[in-house]
Length: 176
Image (cartoon, rainbow, N blue to C red; front, side, top):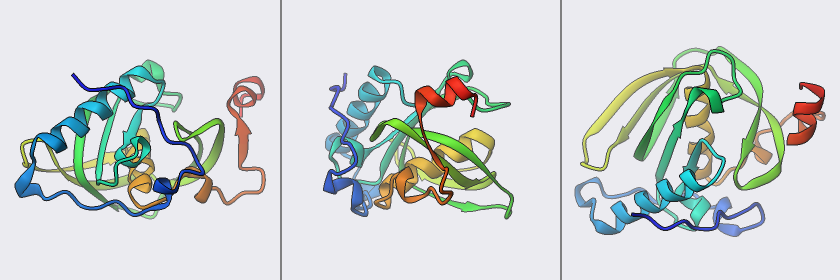
């Protein structure tokens, strides 16, 4: 059973660092404990994904998972809770869309971020097995968002439109 850890917020220097790769041949109890802490912290909050830097750990590990009723994007599907070690993605096409995103490390503010609609994802699971998948829609967006954390970025670095920020309350109020 993992520990619930306070999520680091913008301004914390660890959120600006590139995370270290995990040695896939040495997935030990330390790595498994980090995954359990990420799971517990994600389940305790309102997020749909979390990256190790958000709990103060400079490792390339993310955990994602969401029920479709908790996802505010059209045609979203359930995302089973999944731990990913050393995730990497690449675009499958140039097709993008711009949507508001929230982030546990940027409380109260959402930002319009352009993301690729279709990606190929590669990662390792807790057993060290290599997994490859093609993702689209919200799941692809979520992976790109969490991988940004591993590269030292938050959504604040990704918003390019001058009207690209809103409070979460105003998104609901004005149906942005």
